[in-house]
Amino acid sequence: MALSRDTMVIAGPAVPPRRRARTLWPLPALERALIARMLRSLGDVPITAVLPDGEEIGPRGIVPVARVVFRDARAVFGLAGLVPELRFGDAYAEGRIEVEGDLVAFLEAVFAAPAPRGPYTAVADWWRSLRRGRNSLRRARAHIAHHYDLGNDFYARWLDREMVYTCAYFPHPEATLEEAQQAKMAHVARKLRLRPGEQVIEAGCGWGALALYLARHHGVRVRAFNISREQIAWARERAQAEGLAGQVEFVEDDYRNVVGSCDAFVSVGMLEHVGPEHYGDLRRVIDRVLSPDGRGLLHFIGRNRPMCFSAFAERRIFPGAHAPALSEVMTILEPADLSVLDVENLRLHYARTLEHWLERFERAGDMVRSRYGERFLRMWRLYLSGSIAGFRTGNLQLFQILFARGRSNRVPWTRADLYAAA
Image (cartoon, rainbow, N blue to C red):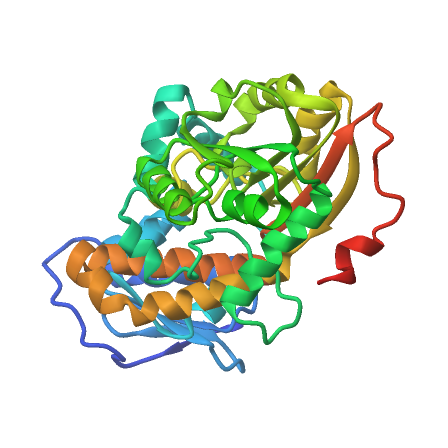
């Protein structure tokens, strides 16, 4: 396969060349052709690829934001499969691919390139949908444990003091992460328009920060559900230490088993773990527990259109995850006659949140490496960097949907109160 006239080849090794075994296959030529084709499919991305023998390929007249160094043939040919992003992620985590330069800028350039469409892409999407882990009651626990039960001290190294592992809300760009997470919880509370003594159900409570905040600042009673044992243990200890155990009950159970009734239903960062095949289960829970004048809020990572979750993130970081489009979420609300009152997109707030997390994660790199190994460190660095790039480029969205019973007239007259105290 010939190189395009817009692609240049810089002769001479830029990295120490590998020692090649004897072979009848013209391996360097095949590698060169594959990488050149990949670069052409991305358009004029500011990226230079370095082949295993040191040869460089990149677009003419464009200063690259990064050099992608392929250490061996397996790293190169892995990109030719049905799930190239997974193969790239694994090769990066194993050190067989190195990105020299700004990793986030490199991923932004890739994500901003036009998405290829065609029969091959459709087959790849179909294959990825088949491989996605379904969130049955048994599998959901295993999926959550895979990500959230890595050790509370691991997350404490790079989250804020309250251990809030969801998008923060920055009233101004210079706000600290701690200030922004407090502002996010206040923003959620204002949207729910809570009154002292009301009952709140939270599905997927993380380490308990929001439930404790609502009880402390708004005088409500909260039942918070979660299937991460480490998170629930942490949250219960906090409730006891802060004298809020009488107002907040942390329940180690699946959202599908929620019973009782509530004035407000809230889920922050849990919908991504439900999966479209279980949206009916979530709808039935909300419809079962929400009072006639009840309202609710869903806060979740989403998409502009239905599409598969990142294969790398779903297989290595968040098994069973799916970031839904708004049209998919409507299948939860519409059949239950729940009225959408407000939709807000905090996409750039999540990009800023992740920037803080990545900076703190890198500062904790020695601890992460010593405890979990180099592969884990690189895998999570790629996940955090890719998430920043995803939100910056609009590949990912962060939606907050406020809803109420369709027959309820206890709805806001304007949005003014949402931002008066922000």
